[in-house]
Image (tube, rainbow, N blue to C red; front, side, top):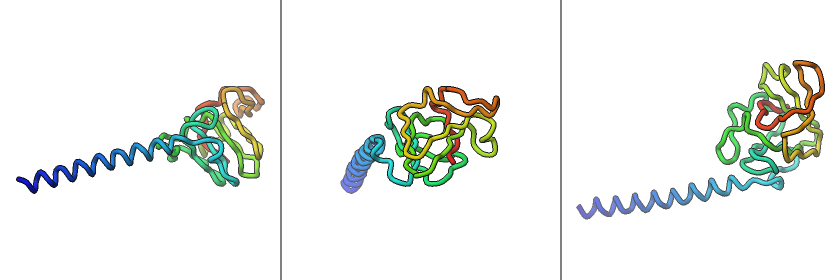
Length: 143
């Protein structure tokens, strides 16, 4: 009986330690900022003003559906601010491949920072016109 109590107490202490570790890791992962976007990257942020989780893209990701922000939340349709440190213009699409060219295309020039996506100019492939839209939480692909 004494051994069972020791094992139980040890497992409980281990569980508490892991719980604290997990909480600390999650909290630090949520503290993303514009400074976390390195040279050569396109960074998508979960909230406006470069907050919440961060997701880094190097190159092209034609379907953000299988990606997560640094805090574990899904990237697709949850992006609210963008930094382009890639050195090249990139395009953010409303729909993933193969449907990218059937919705909005948001062009982000090299070095650009958009702290909010609530009123941006995009190409609307449905009408072939440049329009101002609320693109907040609409990103599904980046190329």
